[in-house]
Length: 230
Image (tube, rainbow, N blue to C red):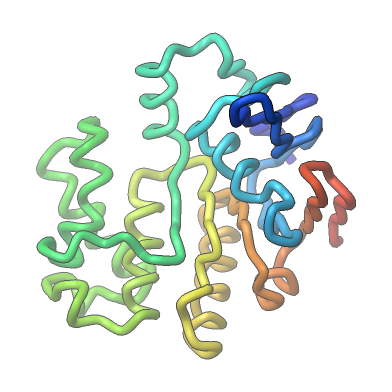
């Protein structure tokens, strides 16, 4: 497998007055293309901080992060934002769809923001991705007209429409019932296999853990275990 992401001795320290809070205490992890990886651990273990650093939403206090052989420490904020738009997508537990846009318009939005896809191709790509998640018939509906499971499918389509290298999913099944959660996990697993997209989850969901090919457990900002399944 191709290595796409490397974290070396990554530390994150927050300062509150004279107090230092160590969120990450020296993380060394390497991710490969097409991984389906769950980051687990109790609240306060550093899962969200790690996901934010992987997603280029935050910078480490110490250590290095390398994407596709490119050290990110050398990028200014504008370049880092551009790099994030081109290579990384996010799926959130609250869906974060824009209520005044139709389903297809929500999916088109990353392509519009990126500005690299010809306008004539934006709608075509969005509809093709909606077909992949089984929502072609909902393209002209609004988020309020969908079930929770359908909204999360739209969020997945929106995350994938720009062909990201990595999808970061923060508790993506937390607001779904067990049936819809199972369908969403199966869908993401299929996309992982078909499109070779790397999925990295922050989760407490045992269903995701059962499907994950790798589980990284954090405790007190450090890797307590890193288990790969054959």
